[in-house]
Length: 438
Image (cartoon, helix red, strand yellow):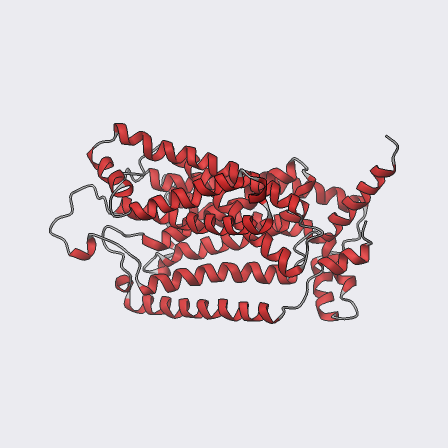
């Protein structure tokens, strides 16, 4: 068992090394490029994008749906692990909560990028229509952000108090900030009881709001009656896909934090094995819903649906569709079935592939459907017949991804990525149990 001071030394935030500073500079560079592209988009209008009358959502909404899906890892996975008191989850939950907060913030920002007149954003609130799913979307996203902040903040109170003392001599200003954030935490019985109840309540709230957010997003698509979206299967389809994206993102960040911070004593191969099994299960469930979504309509679809499926199976989007399905879902399941495939490095590679596949999956869900309009395409400019993002769209989209990574990086820099007090308490409990005669 490690001593308390050793645990604090291992898990306390540290300065960025040279590689970390370079990483921050690179992210800021892409963010600045995206801001310049967005300013130019505001000046010239969305003519600088390749979105037209048919492909009116394009990459921005694909990116938005990806962020919403990835944020699901904290709302459900973390909430379930907290509510079921699984101890193996302790080193992982805070990183998951950080990912959730970063992604849901960026989801809120990304949705505005698709609005040609962001100055009219207030109209969504002032002239809201309760029968419109988008109204519920703009209500649930800010709500989800607040709950995510609370789920991250409440468990941090003991650690803030520890960091206040830890940095008291070396960094007094930082120590003062941690002291304010700790809300005068002393670790009394009353404080612990209140904290425990608060975390449990917030875990339930974020579980419900996470499922509601994914469902509302699915309804946004289903209620358009579009070919490819007109399905009662869409809500569970979105939720299962969100599990895949979220767990993949969590594994990726956990691996990098473990390696850079040298946390092998806290985030072990056992944790990667557990997460590998979770990812395999999530992929299998998502494959099942993909079969329901694509294979069954192949036998019963009307002409419009058949043309849409043909474009995915053998047409223009077939290479991307099969790459996302086979490389992003099937192959990870096969690899994760073997214990060696659930080791840290293979898991990291698989997780990156899954996350990239999840992003392109959202593109596949949106773009081909929009290019299958209700009426045949005729008498319109050639640019309306197809869609691929312009340089402006790519620059802005990459900037949002860089911004999410920057938020994650900064939070991990100033917050203990692994709970200090909780790790110490669990080690003490384990040692006490060892001493009790069987």
